[in-house]
Structures are given as structure tokens and as C-alpha cells.
Length: 74
Image (tube, rainbow, N blue to C red):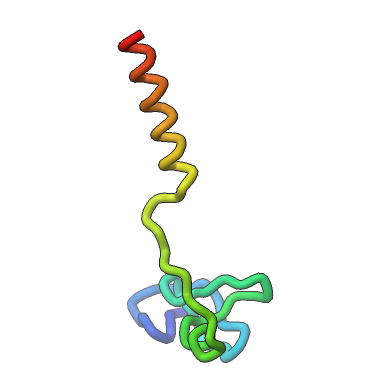
């Protein structure tokens, strides 16, 4: 199954509103189900931009750096 918007990508599932096949780039996850970006924008929902690094990973790296600095300069 191929994505309706990106024929070179494999689709993960179907939009709960319009039924078209969607890939990871087109998928918008909601508490009510998964829909495509077109349906999400048509309903006036703001599509949240994807961040590259999760917030908890940044915090974990900062904590590890702090522990290393204290260990070497104590």
C-alpha cells in the first residue's frame, strides 16, 4: 500500500475522515483517531510541527553533562 500524497513511501494506514492512505509524514494523530494533514487543516486544527529531539533526551544529556563536569572538577 502506497501513500496517496507520497507514492514512493509505504502507507501506515488510512485517514479516518476521507479514507486515503497516509504515511508517517502525512499522518496526524488525534485522540479520536488518525487523519491526514488535508483533513486536519480543513477542520481548522493546527498541525504541530515535529521536533528533531524529544525534550526528555535534551534534559537527560544536560544532566549527564552536569554529572561529568562535577566528577572531573570536584
